[in-house]
Length: 206
Length: 218
Image (cartoon, rainbow over all chains, first blue to last red; front, side):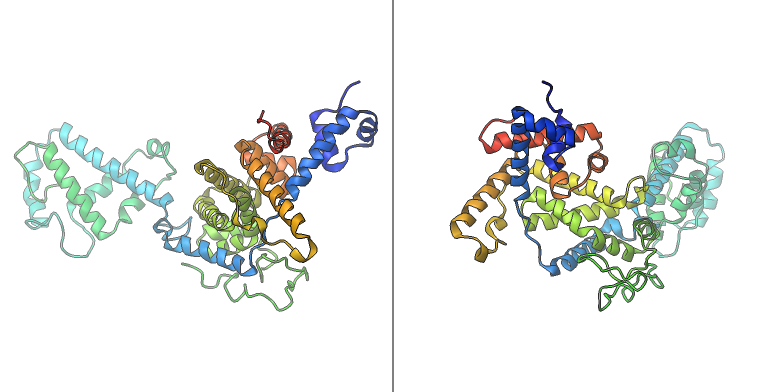
């Protein structure tokens, strides 16, 4: 005598099964015992009560979720918003690409006109002004160079590693705050100075 | 936050006096959001939320919080942990919402998050903790004290046995028995096949039979 399959035993235990299965169970003690055992444990499981929370709890829970989202710095704005982490990733990538490109470029390519450019940059950026004390956006040559390099980056290669799209680089650098721009310029100053000849550190040179 | 003029502003979400929607007169279930336009399906809410209308996520939470909490409770076994897990599940959902493509229903997606949160919780917990509510919420007037004690003991034993099941069997069992979900829905939630769900459910029931008889798991 063939017995009921696993699926048919389950169906019989949960829903009574088909008429054919019921006929089989009537004549097969082994399958009947199996189904009764499953039904017994199902009844035990269903008998475990879940206390119903207070009606006020539902408002409390939605309020907790709202507060958790509101106070989490990762959620300064909603998930699709301009300053979500989704947007921040291109910023970080673009900034890293710009810095690496500048460092490599300055280290590898001879720069015969570099010294000639220095006076103009020095004039544009006052002494000890690699960090601009004002609150306005940085508008010197160094910053423009960062913007240019970020705009010329290989976005297909970058996008392969992240959720980017054309124009992200321009948005990334232009959306940085004045403080962030100044910090980026300062970092570039340090890196480029180190990448050039040692002992030739030049303030404000980008 | 661009919520001004949002059709589901707080004023529109005020509960009507008879809990009926003006458009269809449907009776509102407890815990269901109120005052929503008929067009406010889950997909519209997700789009609105991703577009920056955080109030839309409030509606999502209100609509699905009961199901998410119940899943979390079945994993946690007590109200306090279940509340924390439900909150965590919704925060994770909010974080991941831009990646929700709508391939599955939002409810299925939230179930999946809640199950993952629950499984993570039980994985971190070393020993099953008996819920404080085990002997609460029982109608004492309808039950003799000795029967009440025996039933509480049986519930405790069943809870402890469920807590000892392997994670997939446990998740399958909870979704099947306590959420009454069809096998294909459970398969979508757990990222497995219908055959696997049925097998896990069958093994879960048989393992529980053994555990409740103090036999080792197979």
